[in-house]
Image (cartoon, rainbow, N blue to C red):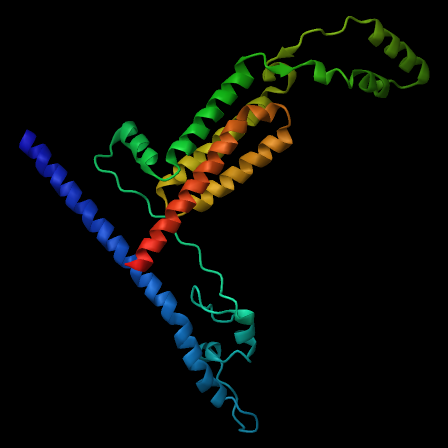
Length: 277
């Protein structure tokens, strides 16, 4: 039994090693093709200019050949060739480098919930993203199950609502007098379900969970850095527009921002190592 487990583990390690080698070869091939593309386009430009002189009586060929015209053509102006990373651009300044894709970290023996958790914890920014998801769950449970939402904040508009609901001045005076004579609500706080519509309360509590869940799900994908950055910005907007209630998720915003920073830093190190190799 032990020999079978060791053999299966060796086969799995060999398969993972082969996948890593194949992925590295594809990345290197893509970089070579992108660096060679501007050179081919620049070499084809003089030839295209030579065939498009005025007075020759010939018209440029329509179709796929028209896309190979120089920068003076309409398609050349609309779709100029993309320079390679680091090549001088307009005004002699270096062109903007293309963003590198994230490379997920391979983890052996991934199976079940524990394996999925370990895989995501091994990714750059994985622990911070999982922390944000945990904070979102705690925030939702706190808002829905505990008396943490101030009720007194909703009493400020009480008299205004009473005045607006009256049909005439006499009825308005009577309603305002009855409103002022009524016993005020002195409770300091309550559950979100008590002060808001249940559907709104549930949806409001699920928003941070959805944002953090998308970030955690993207940890093992090549779009990890971009998804983490977008999730951090979305969480920050949620906290900003939710005002005081959204502060329960403020720690999750910082966690997602730190996760995006760690992922970007790891991608930059991987790209530098690949260029040196």
